[in-house]
Length: 119
Image (cartoon, rainbow, N blue to C red; front, side, top):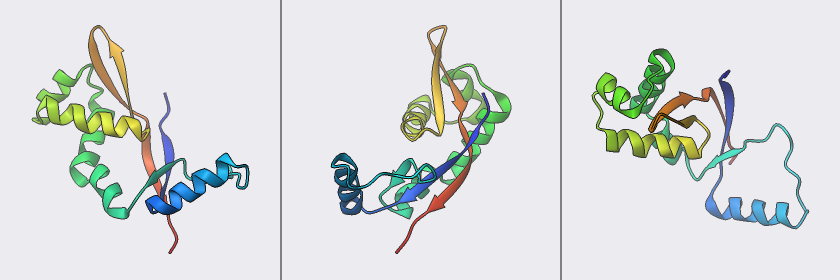
């Protein structure tokens, strides 16, 4: 599966709520090029895409581990930490966790990130 460029938007909770309501009311239609993933702040995005997590994505992409146990051995990170991090990344569409022989195989879905925000 080819990886993709992920468009990320930064928008306050209040603005995001207003946007969501406007979409639901039909007052606003998002364009095809708008971000699909939204973070509340640059800080919250930076926590998910930290240097440590970027390294983790590189390891997954290059080593293609078949399970979290294998990834734990390769990275030295505890499985509980990997599981929490990968589940969060999965919610944002950065990775996919595929069930395979009673194990979860992590697959990197996004390798490029384009961040958009306004003041």
